[in-house]
Image (cartoon, rainbow, N blue to C red; front, top):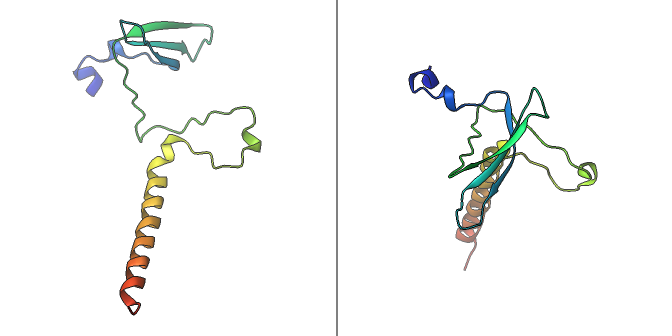
Length: 110
């Protein structure tokens, strides 16, 4: 396994979720990261790091948060997991518009 080969398991925290990441704007910089165990919500803590990586790959599932007023929201709610599909749809629409505009101008008399 990749993690075993590179001895990465010592740095991985299983059954842990990150609940807050804040950039520190003081002279030292860095990031404060608050996390908690998914098996015990009272087991939480905040640590400082020089850098933060957000690794939300395509093999994850969309964990859609809920918030007050969500049912009344008239817009479209989308998880970042869906960005690629939405971007592909938007690019298809723009391409269709550009092609139809170009063909119309080319076929219309001057």
